[in-house]
Structure formats: structure tokens, C-alpha cells
Image (cartoon, rainbow, N blue to C red):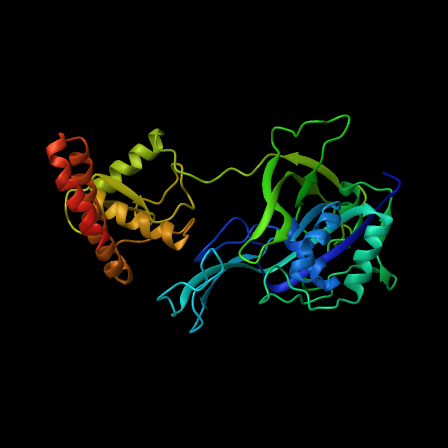
Length: 390
């Protein structure tokens, strides 16, 4: 450990976006900076072109990374268009025939977030990174080009880059004071969440049970899509004291498991009772089409698990309307807050999705039935496939 050096980055800006495995029209962000995002920022500061980035990443991946979430920020969606008048790119790198219009995308951002990143490696590599960040050849961004930093990323101490030697990542993340957004108004939280890169050691050759797999180790940029590999990360909470709004020396790390995904417990007696109340309140009818209701839709999952507000967070739906709403929600990337089928703004979209589902099910149902039929009915199946191909 004594030969390892640690440098620090402060990542703050109006918007940040640290992409996960999202693709196509819905682009999400992770809760904290990814390794591919940080190493991409460094490669940009070094002025590394895309055709030379493979060798650059091979060296930079030797850095071990830890992140302290000083302000988690607020999740924010933005509207984007891509490809206006210049065509849409195919997987092979060409232009898709007949697709010269715009592609509408929705992208997620972290607004007003702040992260402390510790990068640990040998003296020579850390020195190269510090030199690049001190005088970047190209502008650097916080995940996307639309996210410039509001402060220089490199953390300074007495006017020089802050570098520590012979300390662990945990000690590094404890050594930098927590910074308020507005002096004398903000106070530090009781705990700061941290995400630490895990690597095997002699005493711990296998990853712990609570380790998570993040596919964010950059390998190359092929021109069509970036190539990533996996790494293990573990979570910890940094308990802090309060002494002039800084992290004090007595701060300790507590191992925490991966966060639980908020979901409804459909087997609990509490949920069954609330479902019964909602169906009774809607007289057993779908609130959208007035057909008999056989499901109850979550308008919001914020209190899922038996604590739902029956009047505000639940709605009775028939199976078709429920499936239509669910397909729209997944297509739009909605998470805690979902579609309210009683809201008029969703009416046309739900109707269109209902029609789409009905048409698909009728064709698919006929296809499955004919596939199980005797040989003399296979001609009808071929006719259905030909109709759909047209």
C-alpha cells in the first residue's frame, strides 16, 4: 500500500449523467460516476483520439476507484432529438435506408449532485493523470458533452494537486472535508454513501456476497458502440461527526448491502385488503373503459408494499387497459411514478396501445393455434405470415 498514490476529483455541475447499460431512445444515468465515465474524462484531458483510446484505457484501468456521494442530486429527464436530416446510423455504421428524420430520445440526468472520487495507482500513472487534468488538451465533461463541470475537477491542497501516499481508499474518502453547497446554510448528513471498487487480495480472494457487478470498465470505442467489461463494487456508508461542517477523524465506514428495489408485495394481507378496497371503490369496473376490472394498477410505487394510498396511488383496470398502461410505462422508462389512467392526457396513447395489443394478440393467437394444427392447415399459417410481412 505504501507505494500507491491517491488523487482526488471533485465532480460538481448543474447536470451530470453517468450512463449505465441503457441504449436506444431511453438513456438513464447511474446514481454515481462510473469508471468508464471517469476514465473517459481523463482520456479526453489527455487528448486521446478514439482510435488510440484502447491503449490508453488499458493503462488507466489499473487505477482503483472509490466514490463518495456528498450530494446525490435530483433525477431529471430531458428531451432530445438525434439525426435531424442526416440519417440514422445502422449497427454496421451505414445510414439506414428511408430513415432521414429525427429520432426522439429521453435522457436522464442528475441535477445539482456532488461527488468526491478517489483514484489510486502507482506514482507514474497518477502523475500523468494529474498533469492531464491540470492542463486538459480538450474540454472535459461530467458524463455527457451537455454536462460541463462548474468547478475544476482536480482537488487542490495549498494550491497544488492533492495527492496522498500509503492510504487505503476508505481512508482517502474520509480525509477530504465535506463541502456545503451554500456556506453556513447546508449541514452535512449523518451518513455519506460510498461505492468502492473491489479487487481480490490474499485475505479475500473472492468477492463478498453483497458485491455488485457494474459493467463500466472501458475497453475501446469501436465507432459503432463502446466496449465494456465488468468489475465488482461494494457499498458502504460513511458515518460522520459534525465539527464546523466537515468530516472529522472519527468517521467510520459501515458495510451496507445493495439497496432494496421498492416493489409491491402482492402476497401480503395489507396489499390484498387495499386491492379489495380499490375495487370496491371503483364498483368493480375499469376506470378507463368501464369493463369489469380484474387488476389494480399502481399509479405510484412510492409507498408500495402495503402502505399505498388507496385513493391516490391505485386504480382499478381491466387486463387490456392494465397491459396497455404497463407497456407505455416501460417504453417511457417510468420508475416510481407511473401512468394515471384517469388523467385525460394519457387517453389517446392508452387507446392506441390497446388497439395495438388487440391486433397483435389476434394475429399471434391464430398463428399459435395453426402451428399446432394438422399439416393441411399450415397453408393458412403461411398466409398470416405473408400478410404480416407486407
